[in-house]
Length: 255
Image (cartoon, rainbow, N blue to C red; front, top):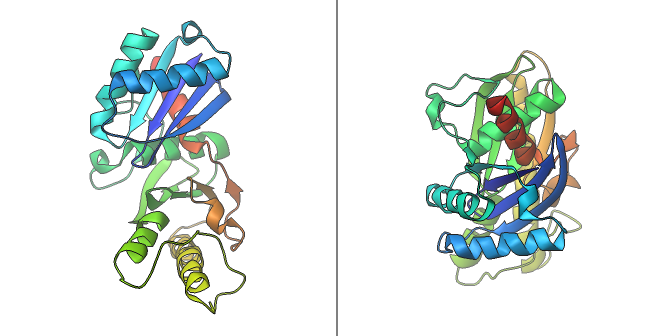
């Protein structure tokens, strides 16, 4: 059994794989100040709830966009699971060709998403990952990672709106019934939710025009459900894309 750990700026995804099958997954908050022992307690609790022994975990794999937490989870793996983790880093085999000007600039989160998309769909794919940032990544059917775009995440933009203007306040981010808000709450919900829906639609349209063939659009990330009801440009939703990509990278490099 493999423990897959995806560490983003806002949340940490944990998954247990048996071969290619994801059998359990969890999400916990990212906290750079927690010590390895604290994360170990959390992991131990999650495994006990799933009735899984740590001795059943024979290996672990990590992708991380918070460098300090890479070492934290390496310690968790070494001390708690007694295994040296596979870490997504420069120089590993990916199975995709990274066509960026500087391939080392591509974040681990974008690499695992690209690997998963190519592994699962074997098609031209635009990946829309709505997490701390909203990223758009393009992978060809031949396995070329062609690049993409990065925008502020929906919650990052919402927090700026909530905290900067003196007379605005934090509201629940749900889609209102119409774009024209008739009070402050629905006006803010419209601007954030429908605004980001339009951002996704516009960016997907621009990227599609630059591709020689039409690409399928796959959405992932914790905030993707906010826009799904308001757009038809998303072909598939896969919340486990980064864990699936991490498992694929582990298997490729350990073969």
